[in-house]
Amino acid sequence: MHTHEETYRQLEEKNRLAELGGGADKIEKQHKAGRLTARERILMLLDPNTFVEMDKLVTHRCKDFGMEKNKIYGDGMVTGYGKIDGRLVFVFAQDFTVFGGTMSRANAEKVCKAMDMAMKVGAPVIGLNDSGGARIQEGVESLAGYADIFYRNVMASGVIPQISAILGPCAGGAVYSPAMTDFILMVKESSYMFVTGPEVIKTVTHEEVTMDELGGAMTHNTKSGVANFAAENDEQLLMMVRELMSFLPSNNMEDPPTQPCTDDIMRQDESLQTVIPTDPNKPYDMKEIITAVADNRNFFEVMPHYAMNIITGFARLGGKPVGIVANQPAYLAGVLDINSAIKGARFVRFCDCFNIPLITFEDVPGFLPGTNQEYNGIIKHGAKLLYAFCEATVPKITVITRKAYGGAYCVMSSKHIGGDVNYSYPMGEIAVMGPEGAVNILHKGKLSEEKRAEAVEHYRDTFASPYKAAELGYIDEIIYPKETRIKLIQALELMQNKSKTNPPKKHGNIPL
Ligand code: HXC
Image (cartoon, rainbow, N blue to C red; front, side, top):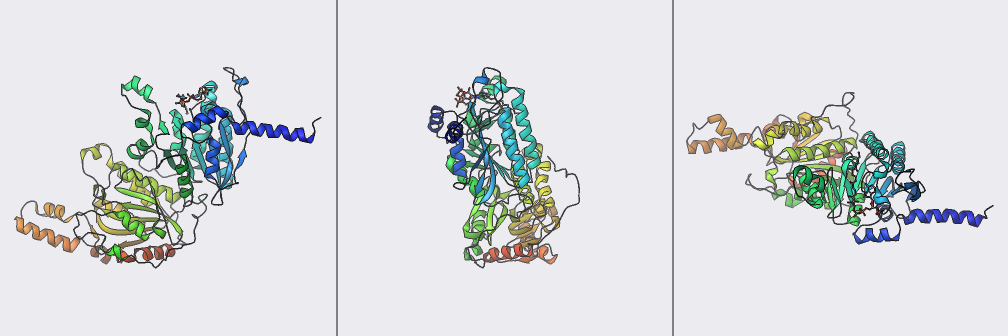
């Protein structure tokens, strides 16, 4: 018979062992690599004293390779729940100090339990990835564990926000769980993701590439578009997750969380009156408009390093979160191309899943011409953005700041595809194409240089303005740039109770 003291001491000891993970040496190695441990990460991510650990004493059940003699409580995965800004979230964190954070049958079950519970109560799941991949000793049981998680990622998609932080290795098929979540954040020079590593690539294609070049944070933030955010270190990444969460509802049945608005909703910004250059060929930075309009000038950009000709991100207007999609005239003249269409489409669909109104700032000269774009499928990829805007039923408010030409006019949340409130600045140019191109086609070299210049001027005065569209009711109002903030807040208020549903169907068939 044990005394009470002995009983409690036994529990204490088990908890101590679980918290020690792979032991002091492994923790030191983790720290030396500039990385935090799984538990340190969770504690940094969540509000103080809110973490509740689940399945702390789970161990693996492998009997091969002598594994039965090598068990560690928790089995290399820390799971549980806690709060961010007082709101419930579920967390799982791979513990690299235990068997390299590898996926076992037992710890995959821990992740599945947390995900199932998150679905039951409608709370987001945040995964902190740092793992050597499938636990080789467990063979197909490990693969089964991954596939169980993949399935849940897809079932949870569009129901609860899912966020993946990559804080170390994430290789092979393991990348496909993060790939199916809503956002991926990576730490520079300390995390990497790839399906096949440098060694395999060298054997198969004879290419020589380092881990960081192949799958580091900046590769996926600039080249592949796999990741949405890059952080300098673990701590910065975890703070980015907290900020991201502040814009998101807990599930698809809730509205995003409102914050008290400390910024005057009537605030006008005189600098916006002259932000658009008088020369229509001159670039300007669309972010100046976005920050001037947002509450407290706070704009949380998503994918800031990728396809910079389109800007995506979150802000608040009158305390309410909005998703912003904007062409960026300061980069490739704000043209739409394959990468920007995919980036924009994915963001629009995320916002629509989670009831986040969409604000579109438009200055787009059209789609990017070229064989490269055509051969790589600008037709189907451009269609993604069009499809996403058409399908979205959240409030959609558009501000044309300058150019809105051709198909790109239709795509960028125009009235015709369900734009609820469509504004234009007086310098808007809404037409089939720019004056030069239009005159060249209409007169096919039949005009003298002088007459041609006259025709261009005439076209510009007649068509390259917002007034034709306003006469037709395609634009609801021509607004002064300085009053953009209040106009957007009014439109959001107008649309507050918008309730629109698309026809019932199993699912649409977005061009992939
Ligand atoms: C079992 C593993 C392991 C694995 C690492 N470890 N990977 N154990 N299965 N896949 C163990 C190591 O033996 C070591 O144990 C501990 O984890 C730490 O690993 P180190 O190699 O010492 O760390 P480091 O030098 O930092 O290198 C990390 C690493 C390397 C780059 C991740 O460990 C590595 O290349 N691992 C193999 C990666 C891999 O090929 N995984 C399978 C990918 S395919 P001790 O006891 O010495 O501390 C895959 C398919 C998923 O994952 C399919 C899903 C559908």
